[in-house]
Amino acid sequence: MELQFLGGARTVTGSCFYLNTGKLKILVECGAFQGSSEIEKLNYEDFPFEASEIDYLFLTHAHYDHIGRTPLLVKRGFKGKIFCTTPTKELARIIFFDSARLQKEDRARSNRKQNKGGWEGSEYEKDEPLFTEEDVENTLKLFETYPYSESVTLNEDLEFRLRDAGHILGSSMVELWVKNENGRARKFVFSGDIGQLGQRIIRDPEYIREADYVCMEATYGNRLHKNKDETMVEFLAILKEAKRTQANVIIPTFAIERTQELIYELNLFYGKKIIKGMPVYLDSPMAIEATKVFRKFPEFYDEDATRLIEKGDDPFDFEEFEAIQNVEASKRLVSAKGAVIMAGSGMCTGGRVVHHLANNIENPNNHIIFAGYQVRGTLGRRIVDKEPIVQIKGKDYESRAQIHTLGGFSAHGDERDLRYWLRNFGKTPRKVFVCHADEDVGIAFSEKIQMELGLETKVPNYKELVKLD
Image (cartoon, rainbow, N blue to C red; front, side, top):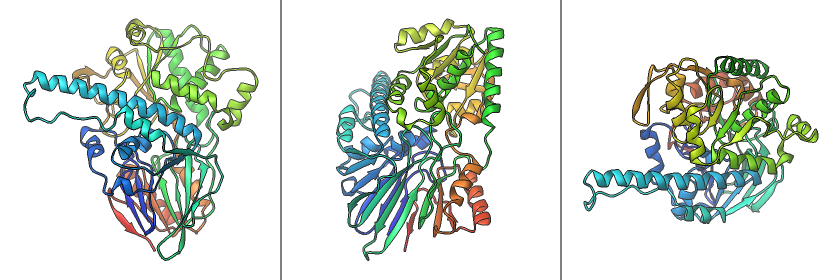
């Protein structure tokens, strides 16, 4: 039995784990690499396996770094089954089609530039998108969805169960009971992304009591998040200061979960009249579609959101909130003063937020709020790191706006949450693989849990293959 780490290894992007039992070939995650252009080139590499030979793919949740190459897998021959929760499938549909559209537009733009440069008619091979809308359609046909906590026997050699990861709507951990070629059974747990305790919409992550092998994320394995209440006080103070100075607040936001969490909190502020007279714009068609999916599945909500709905309050809407769909309405926001503008992408790698940053980043009265992890090499990370000059769409801008990072909004558990989750296994894991973390963070977290819990740990390298008994 072998486990190979094809992404999310000493990095927080491109999650993909390949388990070869000797009888079955299984993938958990098939994420896209995000960050610098060098990192994103990995998306175009060949898989180190035949896609047509993979029997099953398990998806933990609908974030691009966990699902982004799934249509590419299908394009290259995968015809097996894809397992996840129903909300994950619904959100994946949005992400896949949006990505296919953006790739098509990017490639067309790139090809036009190449043709102008004299490449037309030459032997130069034009870039092709990773996948097309047709590939997405073929991918969606392979999905099978299951609820949490239901044990599913696929055959005599494989059983699985999805557990609530508490990260985003429909996110799950995957429990796999597998037999190797000798008929010996082993239990694997793949954590996906483990949520932060006390989120307003999503329930807390579940705890699992036993496993032979654990693959867990450690994105924030070296820090503690700010207290949620303290974060709300800080968020409110930023809004009040911006309103006082008629400045703008730009929030690069992830379309799934972070957007809905922010709208939820803003709804409470405006509903209680703590803030008024300050318009809030959601300038992200994908986030608007994702919010519709959130509305469809209230049974996945935590107690706070459930109580709000029972009172007749829509947690994703309020009087001074406006969803911006078309490009012309987005362009008109260039003249906005004293407004909150939420737009994608969350790491500022593209989308409408780059235009809002260009319009606002040089004004020292304006505020830019980051409410999610920024991968190294992204524009968002450079702004968070307070580089004095940042390049936006090929042009240099002075970064003079006030930069804020609100860690309390994170959908990832912090070091304390991760350690507590792992402690529930007791001494059962034979080995814990620490993944989905920057190299220094993963190593530090691995050493800490090795000392504190007495567990054997490993921080795998990219493409490393581990033989298991």
